[in-house]
Length: 506
Ligand code: FAD
Ligand code: DLZ
Ligand code: SF4
Image 1 (tube, rainbow, N blue to C red):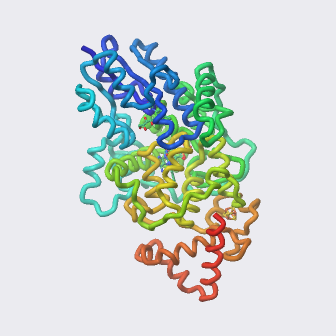
Image 2 (image 1 turned 90 degrees about the horizontal axis):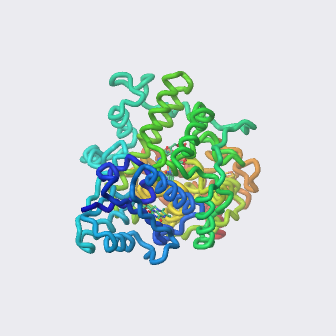
Image 3 (image 1 turned 180 degrees about the vertical axis):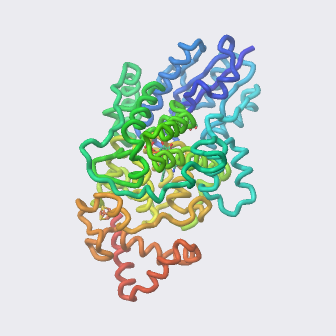
């Protein structure tokens, strides 16, 4: 009697727990391309193509390794379009003894798994996802009874747990966190490293035609398609990053530059999140680079913190709060998402750059997501759920477990401060300090009010005024509330009027 091992599109790892418990000689792997997964939010065309091509390549890898793989293509006759429908078909065809699956990355899919035992009449084993550093029960124990769940303290636990950048029980270099060294603005550089590009092979070319035919009206440019779709190419991308960009990753982590979508970032989240790269392996490589003296500590620590700190922490928060977190709206924001999040047609140079590169590459780096599209939405009072659906659909690395806490918690403060210690509200001065966007913008970043003022400016002060009740008690916001309170009444009126004018145009 055999098992049916369902491997999802974000589980493309040979060391996956479900595969580890299976027997190549007897059990059958099932992989399915389903319409529902491409459309529960209308994913960017490039994201769909990336995932389907990576799935097809992984299936080939498994077959070469001796597995029996049943692979259902999107356009296969009889494809029901859903995980549940495809698992039911495979059960009817092969009569396995049980279904085995590694836990899903999204609550929505975990709910599907929960219904299968009753619906299909056979046991369903859901195994922990061991690709993460922090098992979910460990996160729950850590969170239990804490008033505030700050990433920094969780991160220290993960440093101790993994031994990464530790000297005995002390952090390497004496500090846990070197972020204070990481706030430099970047200058344009002809020799700026770029992620390697990979020409589509025959498998990818077939997928690109399929995606164009089925999802041609989704957001985003399908071509040029340059992502890695195999483990070897994803590793080459990471290797190139380590060699060329990692040494400056820390310094320029928060920088933004016109025409430089990737800067010194790794551009690997899409590979980590679908299983082509292993997070711990990546961190061990970075640590080794530091120990070999090729990378400064602030860069190695900054990078490792993003992965064993932030990435693990947001996953813990997601599962701790699911499914209610998606509905949080502490600031009671209800404005619809402006069209320019899709069209990039706005005079705001910073937002235009972020949305344009998102359309082209299904990528924007963290500070663009947080401090440009995120902060604008926060200041303008955009419905956090609509924004969540936008982030989930437009980025190649987006899955709900990682995107939702970043959007609803970190970026929109919609959880009232469970995740972030203060709202990421900022005026145009922040973007001006960290980028060169403002120089080519039709707005003036120095003006607070009036038709030529940078829209972030009146919206920022209007945000403080509108939410003063909810934020004045926050020690990190109190100073800004006091500054607003000191403005003359006429200035307050000008701010309100300018903010109204900006919002009216959205
Ligand atoms: P780098 O800057 O090179 O960082 C290295 C790695 O660290 C990333 O690949 C990623 O795995 C990890 N990392 C860094 N920051 C975070 C973070 N805040 N949370 C989790 N992991 C992090 N990341 C996603 O992987 N998927 C998402 O859907 C996603 N949505 C986001 C939405 C918003 C509103 C914000 C503010 C951030 C979001 N992030 C998301 C986090 C971060 O922006 C991306 O991980 C990063 O931009 C990916 O690019 P990179 O690989 O070049 O990262
Ligand atoms: C994102 C995605 C897409 C577009 N298509 C598929 C698919 O056809 N088959 C599949 O197994 N997975 C796909 N995925 C990834 C899933 O949405 C992801 O595995 C779930 O959200 C669970 O995390
Ligand atoms: Fe963005 Fe304002 Fe700078 Fe224009 S002036 S690029 S809108 S921050």
